[in-house]
Structure formats: structure tokens, C-alpha cells
Length: 339
Image: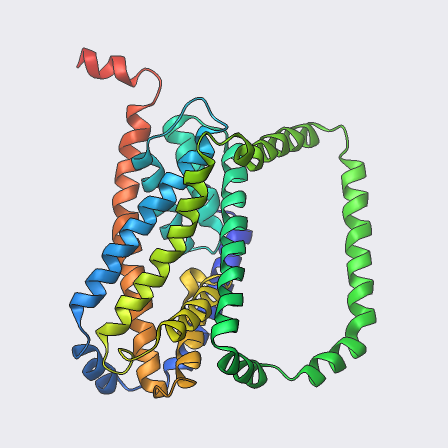
């Protein structure tokens, strides 16, 4: 996958933002205090959480394969989809959202599949995950309404929001119209060009991937796996709270609230949710009477354990995908027989 100058600039900007937020969150936590808190963390419960994450990753790969099988005749194995998924995750640690393209490119190389169709399945996956996350937010709001409203009051001043809209609303509308006219002009000029023809072909494959949900052989398995992926996410958070004394007494609904805030932090456009995850998790734990310093340590434990898991599996995936790409390359089978 070729990296452009624009992507490099995006990489450095998002990394600077992520590290800036991370530094801001942890600047008042000295090294001795942090090491002392980490030394008391239970590795057993962290291990349980990591093992559950492996089940979740495998389930994600299996669900993705269900969508791919509905659109492609050259079907990858679950293991190949798993390695492509982990490769995508490790790329996301370097360049936000690039991992979605990277995992599609990986399967293109190993199984000669259409990137456009694969991207369609990924967008469909992400849309469904977003819908499930919204359901979690609503459930958390119903169970923890008091905390939710208190938190929103601390985060937003609706009067200030309305004031900004009234002051800059016209400017925002003008910029939107200018961008719309510019886009329409560009599209009109490239209409009928070779580039437009390729773009239309890619879009057709993309739509084909999105429509894969209508061609599923086992729709029940797809929806059940989508549901259990989030059950596993919750179980990961539930068990890892037992790794620290300060978080071990959190109620089931409180843990759901922490999961929601962590999920919001992870979808921020920074590498692997660095900084944003830590800030939001530590922030919500304060509302449950957990000292800010303890909340920051907990966020570090949760995020660090998952980043370590992704890094290890991601590096292994590079080797495995390289091997699979060479193995499935046209003519390589006969070459190995000759050797």
C-alpha cells in the first residue's frame, strides 16, 4: 500500500493531536505514582480480557467472511480474513482509518478479490457496528440517566452552542454551498473520462459489497455474531475492572457507561484512540467516585493491553499474509513442485 504525502501529513497531525491529548491527561501523574499503581494490577484479569478480545477478533473475521462469501466466488478462509483484519488494526495504529483499506488490499493480494467489493463489506460492517453502539448509548442512558445528564452538563453549554450557531451559521452554510458547487463542477468536467470510468467501476463493486447483506446464506449467524461481538466487548471491560481494587466494585450499568465512553474515544480520528480513550474513560470514572489518578491508570491498563495484543498479532499477520500472498501467486504452486 503506497503512502502519499497527504497521508504522511495526516499521520503527523493526528499523531501530534493524540500525543498532545495523552500528555495533557497524564502530565500530573508522576512516574513513581504510575509504576506503583501498575504493580498492584492483577495480570490474571488482564489476561482474561485479552483472551476474550481474541475471541472477539476471530468472530469479527468470521462475520466479515460471511459478507465476502455473499459477493465473491473466490472465498477466503476465516484464518486469512483474521490475519487481514489484524493487519488492518495495526495499520490503524499508524494512520487512522487506513486500516480499513489495508485489510481489503491484503485480501486482494492473498485471494485476488475486488477491493471495491471488499470496501463495501467493510462500510456495511462499520455501519452495523455504529448502529449497535448507538443502541448501547441509549441503553446506558436509560440505566444511568442521572450520570449521563450530569456528564453532559459538564461537557456542553447548550446556550453557548446556540450562540455559536447564530453567529457562524451563515458562514457555515456559505462554505457548504461553495464546496457543493465546486464538487459538482469537478464531476461535470471529468464526466466521460477514463478516470470517471474507473471510478464508476469501483463504485459498482463498492455497492455490490454493501448489498452483500441481502445475499447472505446465513443471515441469522451474521446478526447473532454482530450481537455477540458487543457482548464480548462488554465482558472484556467487565473482567478487566477486577484487575484494580478501585474499579472492582463498579456496577454492571456503570461498566456499560465506561464501555460507551471508551468506544467513543476509539472512533476519534487519532491513532488507536490514543489520548481520547484515556481522557474519556478517566473522565467518566470520576462520576462514580473513583479518583482521577486511578481512572487514568485504569484507562492505561485497558488501552495498553489491547494495543499490545494488536501489535503482536499485527506483526504476525504481516508474515502470514506475505506467506499466503506468495503461496497463492499464479505459478508459485508449480514452482514449488519443481523445487
